[in-house]
Picture 1 (cartoon, rainbow, N blue to C red):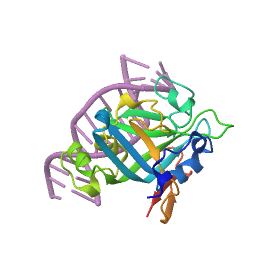
Picture 2 (picture 1 turned 180 degrees about the vertical axis):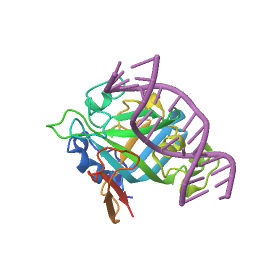
Picture 3 (picture 1 turned 60 degrees about the vertical axis):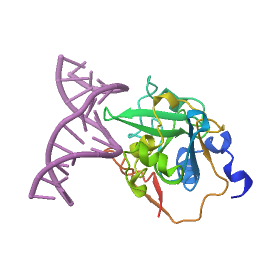
Length: 192
DNA sequence: AGAACGATAACCT
DNA sequence: GGTTATCGTTCTT
């Protein structure tokens, strides 16, 4: 691995249009260090979705700021973690271009590259292939909860995104998953 | 006060 | 492959 591919992506990476950032996060590495660094987990980001602002009927930010979504309006490069279905957490990276007031990229799936045993244990021993192939599966595998709301993804802390050049794999693009509004916007990206 | 929204596992067939 | 149970956040009435 080249030396700087393990460095966190800089804040400027997230200071671009949310849809471009969603596309460019594919192939990067999501890193989770818990329990004082004793639990080290990492995985390649293989599916993302962009959620923008008032122009996006499926976005949490479509009707302005609330207690839950305030991170989407805050500093880019930070984590927006939300609770859904009364049961699950989902992880987003705050990202938006200069002309927008809110935006975030939902990380929908990763392929484990380190700490696979820990993630499998966090998921009641489920098979490696299914350990983190969904937005709430990956937060369960990496123990990502509301405690990490607002965490800085650009610093080597408990949770960050690293990666120099992303892997060369085919990118598929389509409508976002699990929503009913905004299905005309093809803002879901995944690695084949 | 009431209703819309949404990811996963468990179960069924 | 389809159905079902789970409930906090947010908007509408």
